[in-house]
Image (cartoon, rainbow, N blue to C red; front, side):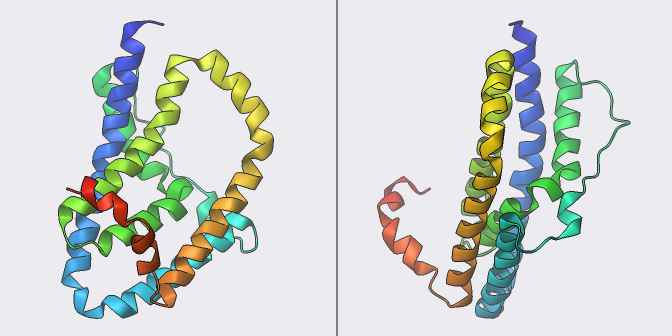
Length: 192
């Protein structure tokens, strides 16, 4: 592996991370402004999350989520700056692809009481999105072998993710989302 490959991958990851983390900060800020409508927004967010969950399970097909907007004219991926620009463009162009999960996390960010918490949520999301790119750059041949075997399970992963989204959406709609925070309260000691 050539050292510049890892550096360009990191630049690519930084590009899309900046976009997603900024979205998290904006969502939290807007969420704080709309706090007086919090219960109504939670119900609306819950319904949207349920729809995304139904989409992931295949029960409901949302055509817009099957399309992507790619910036084919963006050049320069072989340099760190070019990889950064492509990562930045990737965040905008592939948002429909990652839309259901991203929307859920942005909804959670909107319900946070500090911008820092919204930023942390989207930083973790970006990190999760970055892992496959990092692993791919480190071992493309092994990754392709793994993916060829794992691809047969992708539908099951989508259905499970959809089921999880439906459950989270129902918790929001019925105002029971605090159940999760009660179970995860031990994580408070790690909070910022």
